[in-house]
Length: 131
Image (tube, rainbow, N blue to C red):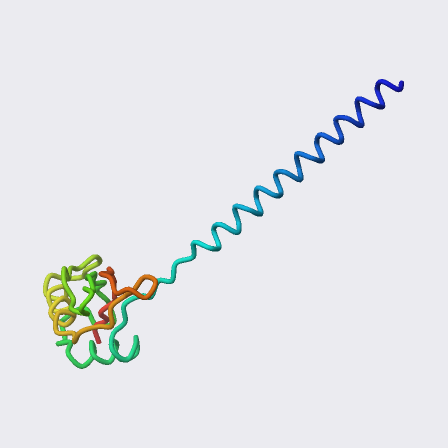
């Protein structure tokens, strides 16, 4: 009986020490992840999303048969704020797609994206809604 009791206590002690070691390892891992936090800022149209919507509405020519529908346009905002690689990723008609790309290419320079305070190229996509 004493042998069984000693054996059970030994196993219990071993399990408790393993749990403590696992908890400490998890705590160390969590603190390492927190210290590796990166601050990413997305590119932005001058004045924000509302101004982008206004810009698109003011430049967009009507296209027959697509009123109330949208084209999703992808592009890259360079470190300088210039837009490149403009393309349609979800389109409507050929005419609507061409018009959406034309309007985005007319855009003034954007505020570029950054990572930890350093400007960098960043991809972006935006809807172009036809009225």
